[in-house]
Length: 427
Ligand code: GDP
Image (cartoon, rainbow, N blue to C red):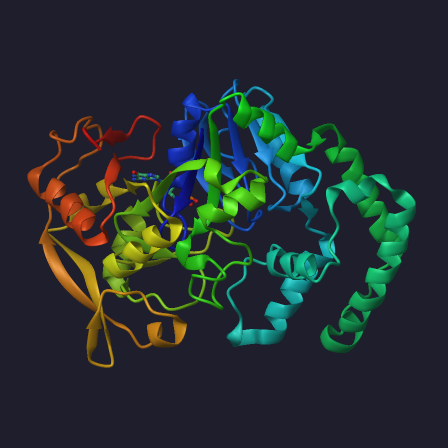
């Protein structure tokens, strides 16, 4: 059985928490896309952790954690992350790295920085982790696969070839120091030494696991609206954030993905530039940001303050649809307990036309939010264990959202911890 856990919004929906929670019953957790540019925050018995590359199931002794072929693999970051959790008392996890995963090179990170510098105010709001240059190179067929580390002669020839083209850009476009092929070879030898114990054919491993009926979780990074095809292009990430891509980025058959648990946040937040229709500003935003998530809405990787907004029905309905949600986990609902009234963006007004369909970017830029206000519940709902135990206005908020997005909300998350979850009966 394969379950995907993916985001309906702009990321930071709380996928890490849901994955960590569901990993209790899982055998294998797979990261299938993205890199160390975003992170998950997890609060469990060992403490509070920020993970960037490791899957969120890594805290259980019984699970295997897979870095799939679709991931942008930053080997030093992965190694540091493994070490950092072991240093804090977590048993050494079983980590498998796909031999087809490609590696983020130090020059990808440099090019990311140089390009943001060059673009100045017109930048994409990159986290400068090298992700866009990495995926560009992957599809331009000049990336380095982990498997290539094991053929030194071929590697040397490729390194020389790549330095040649990269150095043209470094010299003439960015006016920055050139790459040295020998230094790059050293970098790659270092990666080989570090990653070798973890490398395997993870797709073959998953094939056997699927046949044996293992419980497999695919963990997505970011959310629907950051998908390069279906999101707010070009203010998107560079790999697909959709459950469908889980099949490719993990190397399994698409029809094996039976459940698509789409994590949807009870209000909106977004990092980076791009249209954000239900965005709020000033004190209203500051207060939600301060109270949001677990200790404020600031990027896990970058520490940047997240942009804040009210729940967006249009974006979330679309986000769930494009993921193929079979069920929805509705998260961080507890945060809204301070409000007398809760605005919800129920439609977009685009040049006088009111719609609930999420448009492509050019139209999206013109969209104005149409808000409806729901009564708040004015209390702390953390610690409540049953759906019936939630205040009436809180249930009404959930049911309003469920009706508007058109997908069943089966789980409600009312706190950052593993046990802060309410399952809805009959869903
Ligand atoms: P992810 O990338 O989708 O896993 O999301 P992040 O980890 O970046 O952001 C989610 C934040 O919300 C983290 O700080 C979580 O600990 C926190 N969180 C998750 N679920 C809940 C919840 O139900 N209530 C509260 N208050 N915080 C939550």
